Image (tube, rainbow, N blue to C red; front, side):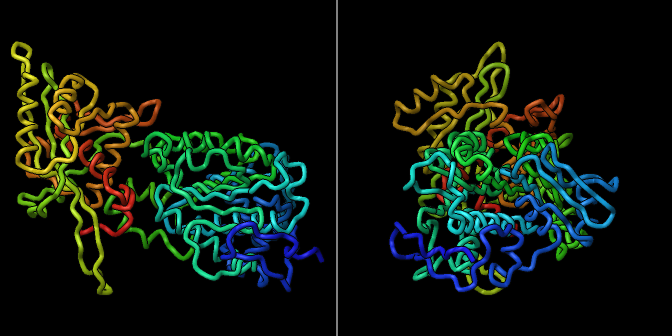
Length: 534
C-alpha cells in the first residue's frame, strides 16, 4: 500500500488540514474509478460520464455494455459522431470488448454539452482526481520544471462569481469525501492543501496569469467572448496556456460549455476536433448526456425559441441567419406606460449619431430591480432593462443635422432626470463627446466593431426572448427590430437592417441595454440565470 498523504505539510491557514486515510485508494486510479469507488466519491455515473472520464485517464479497454455506446458516440456504427479522439489513437475491436491506445495523454477536454447535462459534475471529478494525484503520487511532480517549494494552482474560471462558486462547492465536497480536507468552516473561493492551491476566480487573464497551473476548468467558456479586454475568452486562453504547458502531459484543461455561435476560442478548438494532439472532444445534447431528461420534456423550450433551445440544450453551434427577432417576442416586451422608476434612478443614454446621410437615434433607459414572491414564499429579486425613451433626429444632405441640436437635446434629458453616463460610437462623435465632458457630463466612446455588433445584439436577443426588457411603444423602433437580419460572415455573424429598412433606433437601444447591464455589480449574465418573468 502506498504511503498516506500525511507526509505533506499544509502551508496555509489551519482551516484545512490533511488527515490520515484509513482506506487508501491507489494513486494510479483513474477519475472514473475514484468517482465510483465506495472509498472515493461514491457517485453513480451515467454510461456517458463513465466513458468520458475513462478516456481522460487513457482507459485501454471498455467492457461490452460500454463498447456499444462508445462505438455509437464515435460514429463507428455509421451514426453521426458525437465524440472525437485525438489523432493517432488506435482502436482494437473484436465485436465485444474494445481496446484503445493513445499516442499521447489527454491534456484538454472540450466538453460541449447542453444545460443540465451534468458537465459540471465531470469537471469537479476530474479536478478532484488531479488534486488526488498531486498529493498521493510522489513522482507526479518529478521532471516538472518548477522550484521544489512552488505552489501548484488548480483554477476554476467562470463568467461571474456566482457561476464560479458552483463548481468550487462541488469540488470542495469531493475533497471532503476523499478525506483530503477537514472543514472547520465553509470555504468560499480558495483552499490550500500542502503545495496545492485551489482557487475559484471570475474570468480574467490578469487573475490567471503568472500562476504555476496544473489544472484549470473554464466553465461556460464559449460565453466569455461576450466580455471585453482581459475578461475575453482569447485573453484568458492566451494567459493560461503557457502555465499549463509547464506540466506537459501531466497538465489538464477542462472546458465545459454550451455553444455561443460560430466564433471565439471554443469554436476554433471545436474546428480542430480529432486533429489536435491531446484533445478529447465531445458534443452532446442534454438528453444524451443526462438520461433523466428526455427530449420530449424540453418541447416547451423548443416551442418558445427553437434556435435558442437547439443551442442551449441541443449543444449545436448555430450560425444565425435570416430574420433575427420574432415579432411576437418584440411585441411581448412593449410596455405602453412603464412604472415610474424610484426617485434617484440613474439613466444611461446612448446616441447613434448620424449628421448627414443618416438619422441620429437617442435611447435612454435604466435598470429596474423587481422583487416578487416566488412559489415557495420568499421574496426574489430580478433585473430588467427598461428602455424609457427612444427618438430620432434628422438632417439631410443639403441641411445636415447641427451638432448643437444633438448636444442641447442631451442636456435637456440630463437636466430633467438623473443620467449616469452617455455613450457614442466612434463615428463623428469626438467633438460632441469633448463638448459634453467640458460641461461636466460623463460622455465616452465605445467603438463599434464586428465583435461589438455580435455582443450587443446577442445580448439584446437574450433580453427580448426571455422577457427581461421593457420597450417603449414606438412604431419606428418596433419596425426596425422586426426587420433586423442576421448574415453569416467569416468572423461569425452580423446583424443589420434588411434592404430598405433602418437600424438606427435598434442600434441605440442595443448599446444602451449593453451599457446598462455592464454597469451593475451583478454583471449582465446574472440577469438571465433565473426564470423569465411574465
